[in-house]
Image (tube, rainbow, N blue to C red; front, side):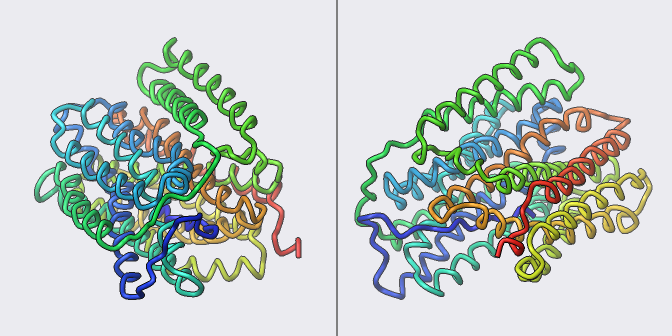
Length: 473
């Protein structure tokens, strides 16, 4: 449902050799799709496996939250560094390293004998995905040109959205049929095939010549800050509440965030996150809207399958299939809303879409233990899907319009990272819901109200902070 956002690419750096032989280009396209599919599937498939993982590894609710966040946190924090590393060190080399690392981490996930091992492997998966995804797009950008480039990126994005949408149902079937470990084992043949194809078909003469160094200090500070903040929210949302360690972690995370901003400011245009982007009031508003709406959406993707399995006694397969209508509707309607944004302006669609998503969350308040899926969950998903279709494409357009031409790639990459960070924080706040036991439904209703409030706040942000691009012409 959180479809990949294609990043605009600059001209290839010196030394990047695009394949001259046209017969290779299709193989390159399918190599990038095959490799990226691992990251897309793992971004959604694990949600339906949480009850099985909990039972298999005797995990506590906080541990279940980290099964999700150990992947999302490094992916969101290191996404921009992964793209910069490809520019500096060579995109093929970084891409292949990402594939191999993701495959190895998946094998460790499948073999994990306790929760700490699983969390460590999930963290490596997130780091690998942060280097794999942006470089798969960069490789497409330098392999294709003109109209063919747009078609290739469109196919890549559509394939990613479809794979992410099918992930929960595929994962549910694997869990019901063979156990939760097979969710990770399915990555192994994908990694082997994409690695072989990448070695055979992706060409790169030498890394681009770049004089500036990678922003390793900034990326490390960002990861440490987000990790501390996420840990504090995870503890605070559980039974223990705001303990001294949780408060200390919150303060530490805030201090590291301030340090990160200072480092980024000193690096100027060479920072992983150019702070000049935030000189635009519209970009600030779009960033806040992304954080709120995609945070609420991340909570939905986790909570609905969990509640259906635990409270409604659905199989994992059925719980995964229950989410399928939403991404299908988003995929069908998003092209039309992208066109409509050009006529009406993005602000109106962003506000209306956020309101619809919030109303969909409020429909979930009618959910009861014996309520059929078609009476509450399905109508709620319809509203949320229609609302998200009015947000996704116009949001990408508005982000690019709010940035200068020379910062468009950084703006789009940062927006994609913020969507994942929003989901990370939302999952961290669900400890009380995942550990609610007999009061699961009541906790679910509380989470739905909070998610709806976040979406209504996003609609207000769209009205107040986002300049209508149509009005700027």
